[in-house]
Length: 75
Image (cartoon, rainbow, N blue to C red; front, side):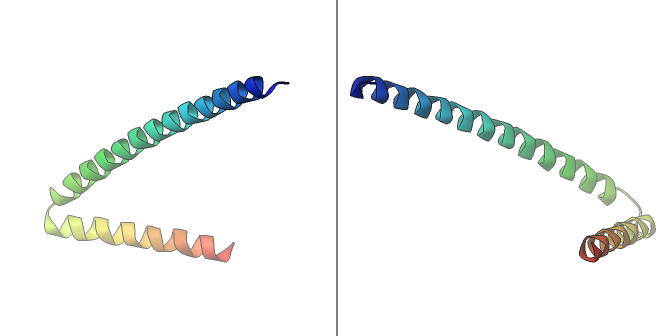
């Protein structure tokens, strides 16, 4: 294979890799935006609860998170 052909092949591979990276970055950005929106919706719903219900929900979420963390550690 000539030097010109190798250079063209290398450039094509670099362009393909750059396109793949751009697509992955766009997908990650979209996923991050969706996650941020979901978090905001959940926070708004929790904030709308009366204080006693909010405390119960947060207590339950905390207990569930502690169980999940313990389960991961015990593996």
